[in-house]
Image 1: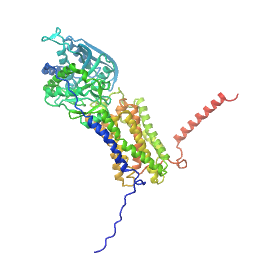
Image 2: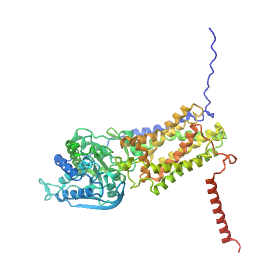
Image 3: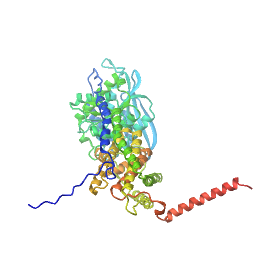
Image 4: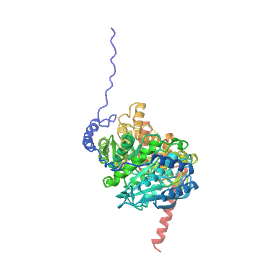
Length: 625
């Protein structure tokens, strides 16, 4: 038997070397700190209380409500805000309430509406006065986009408002010998421009004529889909859990099935990136507990199929009775459901939001500990970090340049405008990409990149210690970004956690094969991918989800602070991506920098000329005569 040649053994790099700079034992040990917040989170799970059902059974007339919805959708099939159909629908609403002796008040204003221009809008409301001035609001929007008849969204909600008002209307002060005066006042609110981002609800909340203690929004309650409860707000807040659980119990009593909610992961994403198209959002953001009852979810039903034959009279009657019973429960104990907080539903129980925030903050500790250790490792090996830091600053300036260019395009009207509200996902404005503006913006971005790349491209082989410095500085910057996210919205840390814990190992696989580095880098993008997937699926946007997110920033729904933090994260990701692709280079020394181009020479000449003139003016003003 021939002797086999000895196989070359591949030894694992020594811990703490340039090939293995991240201390895995320290990383794993730091997770022990997370065990305490996890234990606290487990003990924060609780079952919310439920308000008792009213003593009297519901007397909601389902067939009459269905007939009203069909009549409303038939008479005013096209009722975009400010149109003749919308004005006719408002007059019809007044007539219906006049029959019950409930005077209708109105609030009018003018506002820019995407696709419609600056138009006149009006909210209408009637009040069934109670023994207390505290008000419970039941609302539904009466407009539609003009495509289809809006029979379900939201002729059914408008018809249910009228039927609910009938049960509260005073007929000589009594009904069947029983006083009809409730403990709390009930406001029946018909909002305008609800199909365009809930503008009527926003206006009502901003100019509250009542002290509102709770709100119930009825949106598309006559569809064939299962009942749903929506609780998302415009801020990372949730309505009182007892309100949500009471609504679920009343729906179970009338339909026999528990209403659906978003999954646990979906609820967490809702708190991390709060966005809702339904009209409970402005109330929750204002600190008023509010929910939406619907049969369609966040996205409106298909406008072409939203016609009277598609209505489910049984479903409409059941949700109407559930709403009536929920009103009775709130009237008896609304004080137990006041305020907003944050939580995530897990089955029939809730996980407190503060416990989730504490747990998410604790998940940053292993990353921070390892990054600090990596920084100390670089210092011990006397690795120069200044060129890497200057390279990161150069990338940051480029990304901030993109942000400034974006807002400059916005000021020039290149992006679609409108109020700071999420546009209707079913409207053309949500999916129409402004191709010309995007091409011009891309040209500006390309010009900025060509100017900045001159000092960031490698001109010679990069030493391993220089590349480690670039990765360490970028990881340190990413940690600062994570702390900024934690300070603004702790739930949004879920978007950066995959990047933190995946990209931490990029220095460890630096000398590995290209696919390994690519896999680690792509894994860090899981948070952003989850956000785009959530927008694409829940709102039915599909591949238009990225543009929809940009549109939210263009109209101001996503504020400049969040945009600036995202741009800073982009700069750190760009430096780590360059390192993973083998294209990283530290900021060059003075003798290695390329000659200034014509644009930079022009800027330099202007700056120097301005400084010389200023010095001359100061010399003449303060110098000797």
